[in-house]
Length: 223
Image (cartoon, rainbow, N blue to C red; front, side):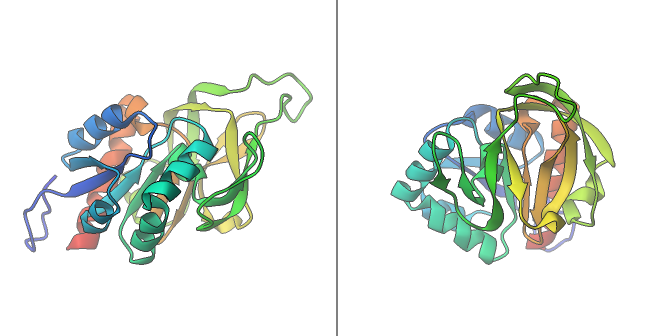
């Protein structure tokens, strides 16, 4: 999209972080459908130059953390978030923000948010067997006053594929909740960060609404 502020009509450039795994092409196409220019990159300098940063995720937490560290992407993500550049994390791109994950042993994350990533229980809150991983469409209830939420309905359906979910220490960062064997955090946010457990690129109209909201947020930050 182009900004409507009059300050600039330059297309928004979004760094789609290539950390060595993930569904990069489908995320890049989804970003482009919302009027932004995706730049799939593993270059930390590109993250610093972009108008916004999207970190997608399909794969193992430990591999993502190791690859990001090897390429200097971990420090770049920390820097762009600290500098106030709009960051959107998708699935693993949400999980990596936390202090650690218990997937295949304990692996440190970026430590930007307090909390850990834990596997779903094999039973729900009533003791019934729960299928893990959680795969399919599910409702997300949004709450809070983050700029992204201004462009989203209070509740929408998105597509999930994950066996692990985040357990934040600070519940104030949770802006979206889903029920699967009990309530879990489906979206977290701070002033310059928004991250979701589901896959907008697989979520059809709801996913486009979310990426349209991200484009509007990036444009407002650049104006």
